[in-house]
Image 1 (cartoon, rainbow, N blue to C red):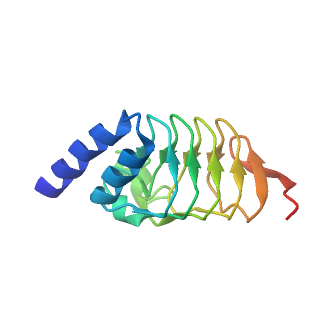
Image 2: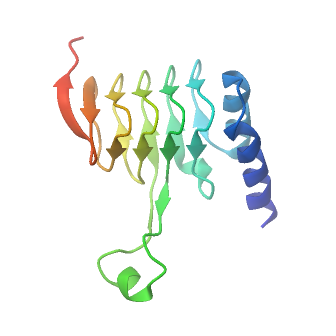
Length: 147
């Protein structure tokens, strides 16, 4: 309980911090693996319970109100949990150079590819290939980026 409380307090500080480097430092203290030169806009929410399951590469950009979840608990209803909607806990990997525009939601178990661009408000429920632009809910590839 103390470990969770510490993580929650650090999250609260990082959540509204206007200084990107300080946000990254605080999130690392929570256990999030973050590469170099990442940019965090204010109001980025990184999983509160399993921060150690988040892996972020170098030069990743997070717009405001991005949410990354390493777990989901879709229902308190035991009937649903025992059926088709069990609790899921899985690593999330965001590879180097990815850009997540404001309002993006990333769910448990997803890998976002190198230099991928995730459009405003997209909900990422499946892996995103390297060098792609994705949009929508659920997010889908609309373009490959030439490299």
